[in-house]
Length: 164
Image 1 (cartoon, helix red, strand yellow):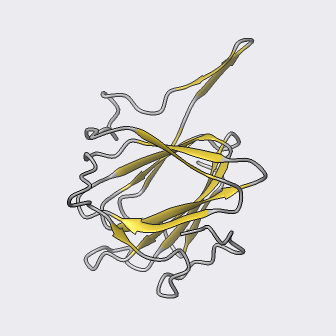
Image 2: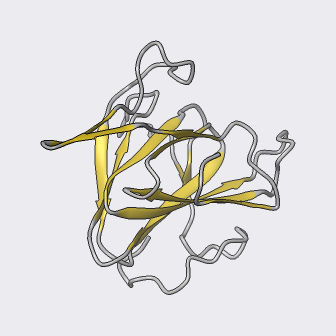
């Protein structure tokens, strides 16, 4: 069972939390995130790293076609998810995952699930994302809402003014 995962009131249909094995030795560590033969692997459109400074919230957004694969590679992130899909059995559900060194996980986020993250602690947080689609700046597959949207039943707590 993955620790540091909260379901409110129930898990979100299609969201998967995969525990990652961290292999440490005297030189450092290696963490395998996903492989082409992993049952969770669909395809990838690109791979990128996004970061946030302490107290910054980057939320909310979702995709119509794209599945995201989040893995915190530096620091700690509070990743929140909200299911607003009309046909989902978990419509209205909220999930929260605290991910990072103390909880190395891969969070698979299906299309239609709003998500975002907050950098926790005193250091910058970096998230590796492996989306299934290429980003197209002409027609982005992205629906955005403000991080403090009252229609989403989630409270990020105090947020830096640069959040959004």
